[in-house]
Length: 332
Ligand code: PEP
Ligand code: MN
Image (tube, rainbow, N blue to C red; front, side, top):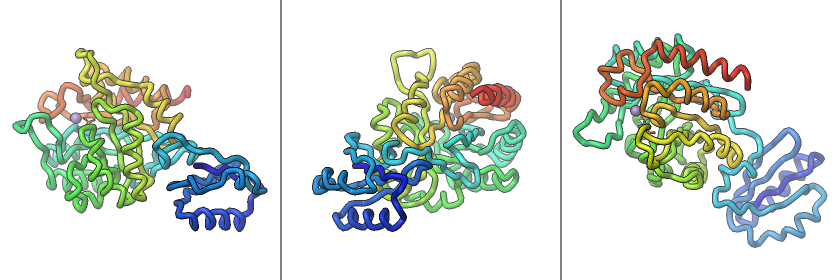
């Protein structure tokens, strides 16, 4: 349920109404907008008498939220949420580009990539340390060592870092990571989501391989309902019958998620298409669709990459993509 308060409501009146809801066992999520205050009520609202509330001077409207996602819902929080990832803001007009290799492979590789993507205009460094691979015989990532190397690259460049977590027991290793990624394969790992919800770390929640947008929103709700509001969605393509591309980039997810939720939405054209030649047009398209940021794989020598070489850009190609994306941003 949401209660929209009149502009004239005083601080004292708002506090007293919040106390009244809390006494009924409800959790109150207050969202201060430019024109009104919205109180989102979480819990069993069957006891709340809508008619009685509507009779109060300070109430503009009261409506029941029928969607099962509450805290991620834009109705609860009409303003865009801005998530701060180690000083880089994402959402509400703040655009971030996270670039770097699929996997952290060596000190030289990650530091060189970090410098090259930073020179091209990236604002965050990506790199997998724990890798979710389809085959157990493929490179599984440098694990703890990979995290250390990412942090070295951060120290060398100042770029905040994003990397994937697969196991909630690994959380202590991520204490200096600026944005923790939940990969597509773990979007419905509910125990992992709940543990991330108990932290206040920004979480990049990637859409599952065959997840609906409602399922994605419900996964965000798992994190938020534990108390962590710092969630960013990532559209990374879904499974369809098309085989030319690795996945099918569902670009409509970007404006749909913006309609339904106040959380930022990032797009990943690399995993969505699987093909280097498609990254530039799809990065431009995602930007035009209103994405709050991009996640793009870049490798100093893609032919030698230990994972996802076919979709990795060279630093030169990434420089060109950044120039085109900047042009698109300029006309929005
Ligand atoms: C990744 O970004 O490294 C990754 C594995 O992506 P996804 O979870 O979207 O497949
Ligand atoms: Mn990859």
